[in-house]
Amino acid sequence: MFDWLIHKQKTNRITGPIVDLAVDQKVAADWQNQYVPSVTYKIYRHGTDQEVGTCDIRLGMNKELYYAGNIGYHINLNERGHGYAYEACVLLFQIARDEYCMDQLIITCSPDNVASRKTLEKLNGKFLETVDVPIDHWLYRRGETVKNIYEYTLLE
Image (cartoon, rainbow, N blue to C red; front, side):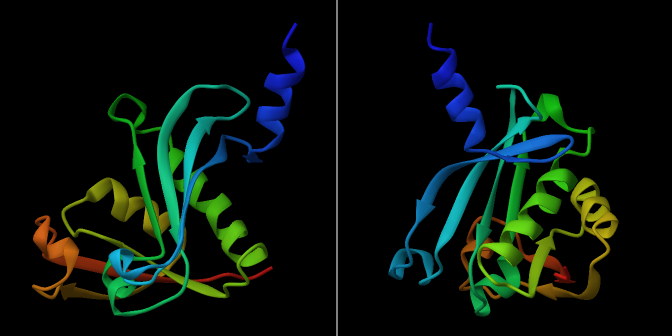
């Protein structure tokens, strides 16, 4: 009876071969987020309503984003190990390039986060450096004191 509604919801997704993304929240730039607008997405197993995690894209570049990165992701504990973060990032690269006219971006990870480091390496980014996070940065306040910085050039 409501098949049309379910179909309409799925067509609002950005689809990939492994995962689909659906906009969850758009956050406008204001003082609370260092004047950086962002878009948060739910990550679904492709073609299903099975949510496997979340990701976001932060638009622009400033000192805050150099340490936090333009892209963040979280995969649900029971869904890890399937490459979903990598697949979500591939879609986010397309969104960054096509919708937000970004030609490069930064993604960071903590050096001890082996899974994220492998994801960032698989995405073929250029490793820039390992840096200490400034003590006044919000990442430092939540215990993330060192970051590996990777840079990605978004080509067509």
